[in-house]
Length: 266
Image (cartoon, rainbow, N blue to C red; front, side):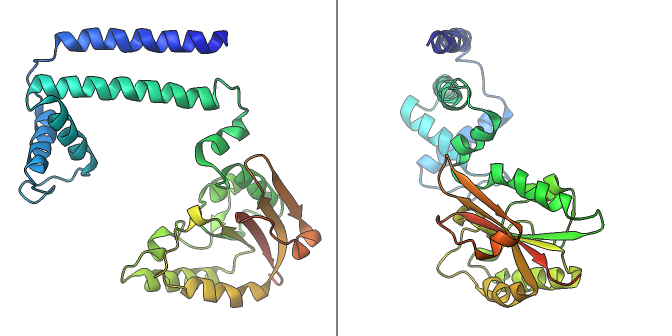
């Protein structure tokens, strides 16, 4: 409780000190970037969408923020700087709220991803990679079917495909099917020793109109493998690991799980 009070006191001092400094400088002329953001925000308030009347490579979110500031505080340098002061103060407080949840509660490192990212298989990736590393050589290849490139990093093994994210292949876009077929060809050519299949919606972002080529291929291709690992993420507090022969008969008890497969013949 005392630690929490000191944290809030420190943040309050920082916010007040920053506000005192910036309030004195509200009327400072806009710099180049501020002018750009303010102009795009001004256009938005007049119904002109980003990039229609002025061009830039920056993403449109910042223009929406400046439009909101202009609408709330007025269209002047002082109004823009006042709005930024409010945004910065709010961001500082939100960061502390996040820190309270993760750090000030003294969560161990393996708990932090759970607090931040829910049931994504980030802590489990460490154990999965440890299993793969212990059973492969540097020349062996592995494939991760899912968007979990951290497994390649932890395992220190070569990937069987250059597609480390599944998201573009699930989008309703004309290249999705071709990308999936290229991933399939790369995996079949590389003949990975192990394949990791990730069953987590956040690892795929499947849409109703998503091309299903990759899933249909895996139903056939997995016949060349034995399931040697099954990781069931039951809740934010419990994950069960089943390895080797026992994994073949493991059944999922949750909606988020990861399976590890080993090729039957090298």
